[in-house]
Length: 456
Image 1 (cartoon, rainbow, N blue to C red):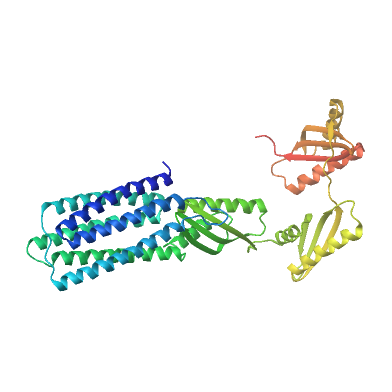
Image 2: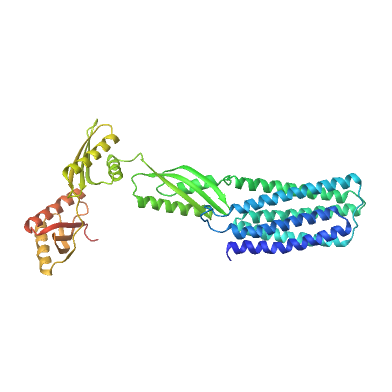
């Protein structure tokens, strides 16, 4: 059963129960002349109106957001609750005026019989059942309208008990008992209205639920990659918690990594609040542990430039930075030089005293389409690679592939090296093999190697 069906079915059942009990109490109250019972009947009539409004509202409040209601229709429940509160105050005022009139005029007590007590006991039992059912539905669906309806019926129980006390007092000869009970019902209605008004107004003015800010902040801060939460706002619209946050993330993270952080933050707040809608704005910030190379890579990435082989030498009072900058191989030299100068200036603005040298080289083109070379050619290349490796630290040349393209031959191979070797040493050894292969086979355009440790 969906939450929408649950809310509407409970509200519909309450309509029939409210109507039947209100009519019964009103007829009996008129018959015996009891202001307290008539007041309680009118209170139930207000509850009937409230329940009809609730039944209509909950059918609309769960509709999704549209072009005119960007946050959905949940606030309709708060508006309906506020309208019912106004009706309660009107009723309470009218009952107090009539009770005061009867007390001042000394009106005769009502006619006492078993009928009003039977009606009131049934009313108490029905209201207890309705209040419990509505309270469960309100908690399950986080519906403010159903919660207000449940509070109505709980107050009806207290009102019916007050009427019973008033009738008992009247039966014992205290003529004022019925009017006093009516006044007590009016006070209960007013107190109920005050409680409802406070909760409803807080929702309408977007007051954050108690503890929601702290809980949402903790949930977002727990997401790996979130450095801190700069700002967070929470509002309730119906059963949905809307959270708007600005969170700090490392500026060295790529866009897809930031998107992962956002997704994980949405999962975290949904786990904490259930029905939640998160607006996550990421602000890239520099971390204290950023290296000079990290900062330079950020500068290049923000300019959309491809750089590699960044070397940094710290001379104490001065930094020496060398960078390989890749640009379109067909670009004019003056245009490429302007790009390099701009990159140098950006780096110099980031650091106080730095000397920057940029080496311009053509951007490695996409590998052209090719076909696998014949097996004999692959065997020849593989034998040459094994010979160039010789008895050195690079061994076990395997998985050799050769492809013929319009630009020349592309060679891929795997090799093994001692696991204790440094990356620099492995690169130097493999690079020597690649250069030897290109010297021996001028048709080889590019060599791509993959070094790995020996098999366990």
